Length: 263
Image 1: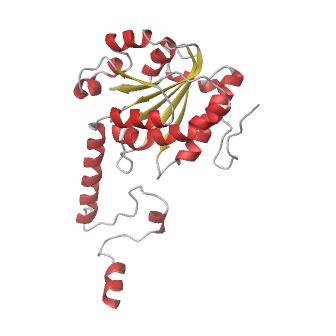
Image 2 (image 1 turned 45 degrees about the vertical axis):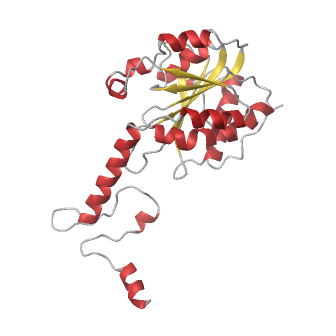
Image 3 (image 1 turned 90 degrees about the horizontal axis):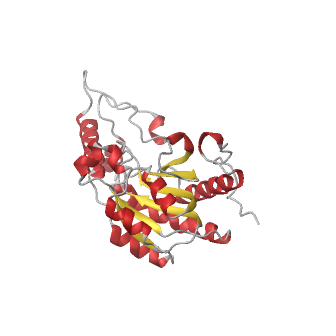
């Protein structure tokens, strides 16, 4: 036992020791041997880089998403951007912001009344993030939305989508507000980070200053509960002030109580 404890506490020569590593997954206090990184740290870097690449090429599990949405009593529809494959998605961001002709026709055929909120889920740059976290956020957000008696459009599940594709979807479905949950660009310490973008009166051609963002949603970042609370807070403020983006003051903070339900 003593030998095991000594082995666990052993520091490789040249490896830095720092309390910073207790508070961040960032690459700090890596140590060195000569002018190079330790072999252990280089292998860790290569592994994280591989995980980030895998996340970019991961696949959105639409079947699982539909099953979970049905359990929540939510309708959904499958859509696709104008992108033909993943390589084109990476090279042509503009096509990822537009619905394919078939998807556009499919949306127009949905018998849907005007509604307060359209939720879109898109793979973005990490389907891993969407498969792991998106439905967990929706599961916590839906009860708050239902308590307000807001009408929900069918949830749009989009393959090869970018953030702005939510504007076209919500405009077609006559939604007052839209929320898109999408995989963020993978980082070396966070290949599964989920982002949420919210827009009031979405329309084709809207630019990014007209949106609000909640980022880094994952167990190692912003928790599902706090993310749902912040999203709901922003939705309420968007509806109350009838705007979104840079003009909407975000007063929500980590120390703020759970989002209230007004009236």
